Each structure stands twice: as C-alpha cells, then as structure tokens.
Image (cartoon, rainbow, N blue to C red; front, side, top):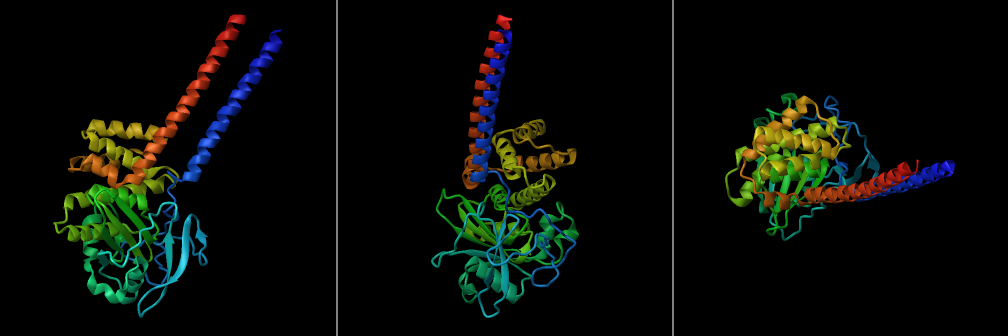
Length: 377
C-alpha cells in the first residue's frame, strides 16, 4: 500500500513539473516572438583599433568600427540587417545601411515635412550626400531646411568626461534629422549605419534631455558608433523649439548613453540593459533621489532583471542617477516620450505577475499533497 502511494506521489509531482516547464517554455517563446527585451541593434564585436571604414578612410570622431563583417544585398550580419543602396546626388557612392527591424521605429521623412538637420562638420561632400540620401532628403534641396553643424570640439566638450579622448577622435561625422510631431506622439527613432548606439539608447537619452514629440533619423556615411549624434539631435531640437540648448540636460543624456552602452557591452548584449536603466530612472524621477534611495533602487533593479554589476558599474549608475534626479523631468512626459521602452517594462511586470501566480498555485498544491501524505504515514 505504501509503495502504491509513493508511486502515486511520484506521478503527480512529475505531472506538476511537466506543466510548470511547459508554462516557462511558453513564456520564453512569447518573449522571443515579441522581442521586447532583446537588445538586437548593437554589434557585440566593436574593434576600436581597426580604424578602417567601409570607404577606406580612417575612422575618427565618433566612429568606432566593428568587425561584424559585411553582408550581401539584403543579408544579415548577426542581428543587423544590411543592404546596399545608392546615395543621392551627383557624387553617388554605395553605402551599407545597418538597421534592425525589430527595434527600429521606421521613421520616414515626407515631402511636406519641415525637418531640422544637424550635420557632422567634417563630412565630405560625398559623405554628406550619402547621409542625406539615407535620411530621405534631396541634397539639391538642402537650402530649404534648417541646418546646424556638430563639431569635433563639441564632441570632446560633452564626451571627454565619459569616454577616452582617443576614442572620440578628431572628426565629427554623425548626423541627425528631426521632424516635429503632434503633442503626445512621443519620440520615434530610426538609425542608418549606426552600429553601437541602439534605438532604445537614443530614446532613453533624448527623453532625459527633454526632447518631446519628434521623429528622428540618425545616420552616418559608413558604420559609426553614433554617440556624438546625440549632440546634433539636441542642437537641432533647440533650433526647432527656438530656445537655448540646455547644457545640464545634454550632459546627463551623454552620460546616460555612454553608461548604457558600456553596461550593455559588459553584460554581453543579452541583458535588458535599456529597460534596466529606464526602470531605475523612472524610480529616481518619481522621488528616489537621495543617495541611499538610489542605491536601493539599483539593488532592487538588479534582482528584478537578474543583473550582476561590479562596484565600478554601480558607482557609474549612481552618479548618473544623481544627475538625472537633479533635473526637472516630468514623470508623465518621460513615460510618454520613451513609450515603447516603458511598455516593455509594463509587459515584463505583467508576465512576471502571471508566472508568479502560476508558481504560487503549484506550490500550494504541492504543500497540500505533502501535508496530506504526512498524515497517512
């Protein structure tokens, strides 16, 4: 009789484990299909010492070349879709577009839009035509647009505190186009030939800097890191809004994009780095602004996202969040402008709640079975 009861228990426990495993697999499959948390836009194999761009020129400025390799027309390099197209204008050259369809907002500049441009000051005419073509702008009509430039001096001004000067280099090449959209639309971003900064990184940082309700395309004439494009985005936005560039907000945004990029690299690109930073930032903006509160939020976020940070990484994030906490950021605006990232967080919270409920249900059944059979023996 005892043997039969033991066999029965074994069968029931095996069934419960099978159901639980099936539930976890389904949840994992759902995450993979939705791609909510996968950081698929940045290349993992960044090689700053390579120094060779696609057009044979030495890469300086914000150009960090990568060793991800080139694909045929329409092929994929890792998780990056590549495509060979012709640049517009008289100096047509072939260029490689790097764009991730899972993350990209597929921004399109229409003929009746009134975009504001920030072009790298060191672009050659050929490179400028390439960049404008990628943005959907006719180089012959450039005089019809509001144009500012980003210099290498400005790159060093805002990046020297966060990146090695030799990495920043001597040329400004990243370029940006911004189109104002209706209030409440939020920030939408596409990238062309940007191999380090992801759409989510830009969105997070631009929301921190105060940019609102705009479509943005970041482009390079060949593969670039794209970090300095943030300066151009905020210069063009300030021009569009007819106001002074907020140096403190831009500094915090530059700090954020570098910290996020470095964290993403150290974690191997597999963690939900953008969501992690967004979650911590949300809690800080909501009121957890003192040092101890920030440390607690970071510790809680590490548990939530299953992330392990070094002491140095924790210090960097604490310093960043103290900066962000000192800015006058409206929480509702932050959540709306970086909407896709916070929607991912909400979905994660929902799924975590469902899985926790299922686990609790099975735990209750298991404890009831154990309690019942303890009474028999």
